[in-house]
Length: 440
Image (tube, rainbow, N blue to C red; front, side, top):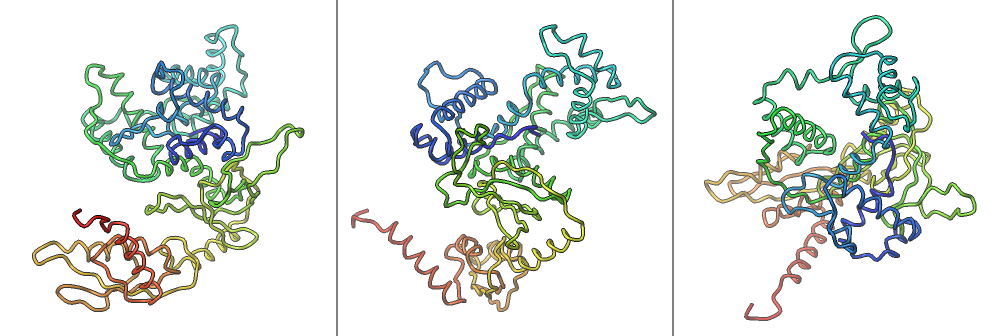
């Protein structure tokens, strides 16, 4: 994955997706908390990325980036975060050096010193020559991401490509694998690593049989583009959870006027940030499929806290905690969220709803879905045409969209307050769709 952060580009692309390019340069800069000059530099950089990944930009100089980064209605084969990972995960010198390392290891195993001699002999004289520390750092990075592995044996260690997985499968099995990865990438979370695996398989096909390119048999439509952008934070947070480390970050709440603040290295140009500096111990990462949002559940000075990942920037690892402390905080979180539909930690409420079955002879998909998604709830009463369902949840905010999604097949019975709120929502919907003219 990426070796450097690109918070600014992620926040910019999120605004682009949400506003469809409706903001002016000044409005974009103010929302991001940067200057117009920095905004223009970001635009230029993103256009360079688009040109590198998607081919040449249109000839019109005034064409907006929102038109250059285009979404196909069905096929979202290259989400925005993916081309950021491709174009910015490595510096130009790193990209050239690592490409040469992989090309050499494709032929036979090498030691680190043999690879250093090879690089020094092949790099142009005008390029900066790597030292042993740089080569070993590159090898460590490639080993961590699973591209190469050490061979068994005494020192000095020899490295080789870790490509047995591809080489052991037949061509038909590889095509089946490609189709499986394609489907799972578009329908499951997280997505970006799946896209990288899919693209790697496609490149393998093109190298082996240029006359038989990979077929794209599936078409998709994404509803939440921003969820992929938030995956930029997912893997650093998972690593912090695994290593039991706290994280420091600048947080912008959903109600904040700004969504980003640049790092001010020059004290003459320091400005007050609208974000809030936070330090917390991440315990879980949760995805809300109803709204396409990522959350980090963490323990801080104020106890258990919930953070929207779209508002987290400048994430850095902090001090480690003892395994016993982490386990205690995790147990506290699980107890607080025991009755959460998702992540709500409010007061437990008993919800009772009546569900109506489909017509006679039809599969009872309503009951199947309630039992599948209702988690710890139970059916208390049942007849041929309906059944009553009870569940205890922390508050009613998170379960409300689920109940609403059943439409006329669901009637909320208790609590009375939730029933009134649902009635008001449906009245509002009726008013929205009520015809103005009688002959419509």
